[in-house]
Each structure stands twice: as structure tokens, then as C-alpha cells.
Image 1 (cartoon, rainbow, N blue to C red):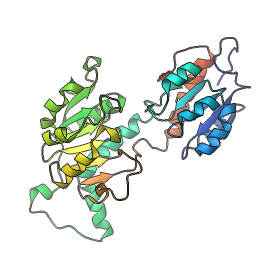
Image 2 (image 1 turned 135 degrees about the vertical axis):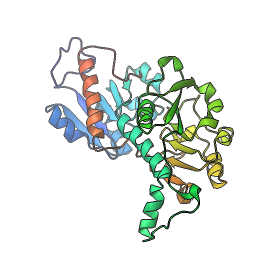
Image 3 (image 1 turned 90 degrees about the horizontal axis):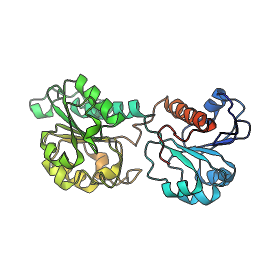
Image 4 (image 1 turned 45 degrees about the vertical axis):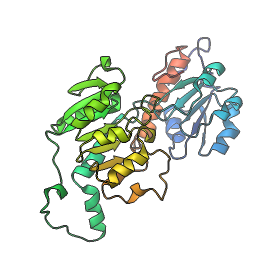
Amino acid sequence: MTDHSPITALIPPMDQIKICFAHGAYDMKPIFARQAPGIETVQVSTYDDLLKVIPDVDVLVTSMMWKNDLLPHAKRLKYLQSVSSGTNQYDKAGFAAQGIRLASGQGVNMNAVSEHAIGLMLSLTRRLATARDNQHKAFWRPEQRDPMLREDELPGKTMVIVGTGGIGDRIAKIAKAFDMKVIGVRRDPAKGRGHADEVHAFTDLKSLLRQADVLVLSCPLTEETANIIDAEALALLKSTALLINVARGGCVDEAALTKALAEGKIAGAGLDVFAAEPLAAESALWKMENVVVTPHTAGETRRYELNVLSLLEQNLERLWDGRSDLVNQIV
């Protein structure tokens, strides 16, 4: 990283800036130190420790550890780089009033989440989760007389993707490689269909659900997408349809989904996100044979820290150059 003129910089120069990495799992400080030696950094893994250091921090890299009651203590904070693509947890008006720039982590987990969505689908169509359960029981499953109990094939099936941004479009690209038909649904269809065969608005979703063999949610959680898959939407799906959710738990009426799965109204679900996380131990979803549960890990990969730090470094360069346009700018 190169030093920049303090005359135009929107953040302190390299020899005066303090950057904090705040996350319970990601170990970003040593990686950043190798890439940008000489810049003062601190790393915390709990909210209480973040509260202690936030008054002296110029740049913060975090995600769900952020609570808006930190704002009054963030006297020096000029830029927050969200580790996650979602930014619902941040008081954007408060950030603007306090002159804090905010950028999302959109795109850093595009490969990971899209591949996870496909993995959940394959776990269900190829019955991989069931095979793993049988492995632990040392049970060799006999050939199935009932075709509906066999593994399935994807060519010719229709995937409906709700949210065809970077993640959704890559899901579409991979699904096309399986010879599936792909229908995209997005807030603004004028932005293009990408790799999908066709694209529609959110308002058209319920008219499209009867076509879906696989329904994938990869949209942000907004007022428009909250409970976008409710009891009415689930009732429109085929009894053989699968639901894959790598978006947010709030996009689905979880009680209605649990009921539909229990009653065989849809064939199965691959779920990485839930209305309340961690998923409660008493949730029926844990023990359903037609459900694959992963603990909101779709975005995690061995490269995640590197991907986030690449985004951070790009935005630091822009702020040092006096530019007001950040990559993935929110505020």
C-alpha cells in the first residue's frame, strides 16, 4: 500500500491511523499486518472488548458484532467496512450524521454462497445427507422399488431464483451447466437477466412458483422480501419442489415452511439461514429427513479473510486519495 497526501485524505495518514478488526471467528489482523506493515491495528473477538477500544479507532472492520449503541463512543470512527454483505444492523442515518462512511462486503462471498446453494440442492436431489446418515449406521441401502425414493436428475428441471444479483446470477450460471431452465426474479428486471433464461419482478413471483422444481432464495432482506415465501407461496409450489434458502431467514415464514415440509406439501428444503439464529434445539427442522440444515456458513471459506481485506484495501486507497466513492458504498 502506498502513502497518500494528508491534504486530500478523508482518513488519517498511514502512520497515524488505527484500524480495528472485530469478529468472533475471522483472524484478519495478522494477514493485514503482512500486507500493510507499519499500520497500527487491533483485533477483538467480543462486543465488550470492542466497546473498550472503539473510542480510539479510525477504521472498523466488523459485521454482526456491531451494535448501534456504539455510535456515541465512536468519536474517531471515519469508515466501517462490513464483513457481511447485509447491512441491516447499521444505523445508516446515524452514520451519515456522524460522518462515518459505510461499505458492505457484497461480493466477497459470491463464490462461496452460490456454491453452497448448489451443494444444498445436490444434497437433496442426490440424497447425500441421507447417505451420510446411513453411513453412520453402517446401513447399506437396498435398491429402491419406489421411484420417488430414488436419487433425482437435474436436466430439464426449472429453477426459480429470487434475487439475481452477484450470488443469484452465479447460481443461475451453475444451474445452466446442469441443463436446467432458470427463471430469475429481481426487484428491477431492467437490470438484465444475466445467466437466467428469463427475468421477472418480485411482484410476478407467485405466478411463477408453479413452474419451480427448485426455488432458491438469494435476495437481501428488505421490506419487500420479508416473508416473501409465506404459506400462500408454499401452497403454490409442486409437492416435488425443493426450497433452498441462502438469503436470510426472515425471507421465509418459518412456521409455514415447517408445516409444509411435515405435511409433504413440498419435497424438501436446504436451509442455511433461519428466523432466529442459532436455530433453536427444539425446532422440528433439525430432525426432518427431507431437510438439510447448515449453520449460516454458506459464506465461509478459507479465503474469506483475504477477500474482505482486498475490499478494505481498495477502500482505504480511495479514502486516502480523497475520493468519496467507495466500493460497495452504503453511506
